[in-house]
Image (cartoon, rainbow, N blue to C red; front, side):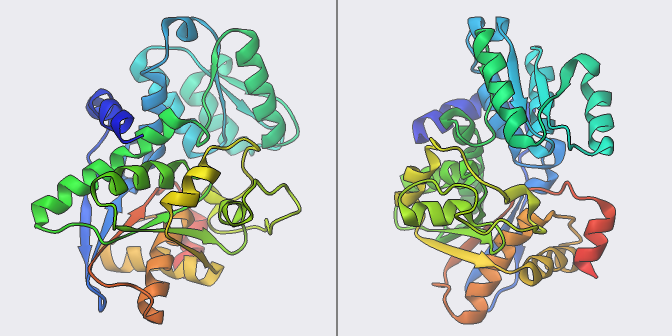
Amino acid sequence: MFAKTCEVFELIKPFIRRTPLLKGDSDEGIVYFKMENLQFTGSFKLRGALSKVLTLSKEEKRGLITTASTGNHGLACISAFKESKVSGVIYLPGNVSQYKLAKLKALVGESGVKVVGKDTAESEAVARSDAAKANGCYISPYNDTTVASGQGTIGLEVIEQLKLEGVAPDNVYIPVGGGGLITGIASTIKALYPDCRIVGCSPENSPCLELSVKAGRVLREGEFKNDDTYSSGTAGGIDDDSFTVEACSFLVDEWIQVSEKEIKEGVRFMFDKFKQVVEGAAGCGVAGYTREVVSGGASGGVSVVVCCGGNVDAKLFAKMIS
């Protein structure tokens, strides 16, 4: 995957922002925060969406391009469609909020949005089926090696930025949902720094990928805790055939589950320290790092925390930092 990441990095560079690496204070070595909340569209997802869309074949571009998302991935795909001058359709479940529906329609028009199914799983199934019937392409938010390679470009930037500081990474803390982000970054970091410790950070209320890796198979709904969480961007189940389960089994060195209180504290820390607005998923990574520092589990050296996004409702953000 490292070679693919280097390849797509050159393709997507004109369309992405090289996000800052902010240095923080720590009692345990040196810590940096990779601010993907400042990426165009407000999250890291743009990298993967561009990576996929810009490498589609002519045949796929002539067919129906679909995705299913009510959040960051949907916004990223809309931007990628525009930059690559292709048409795509965002599939949404019937339970999508009217606010999100109106926002997406304002961006892509009525023809760019299709509401179908009672939940995200059903809308995703229809999106996949429609794309296949039309000889097109369904763009997964995580279960696609090209998408994950795009997310891996964060790792390339981090390495370049750390070199300017005269240091190399010893620990990288990454929020975990479906696993595209951690797989991409870990593949990149490990290719150049094989001894670097990769730490996956999940909410206690929805740790599907971690538990699936430990079980050696994808856990189904009902086999893992899936409660409401401030880290909504990482919540929920994963595809039965997700390549990220096997990949993470050898790429991820440690797993940490964080509480809702810790996620809130992570979000509040980024606002208090850097005046940065991050979403709950980003708070997971900050919380994982903080947990290790407090417990003495961190191995010291140079740590990097990936702050994956900043698309958060104002009222929810106010609640998290209160």
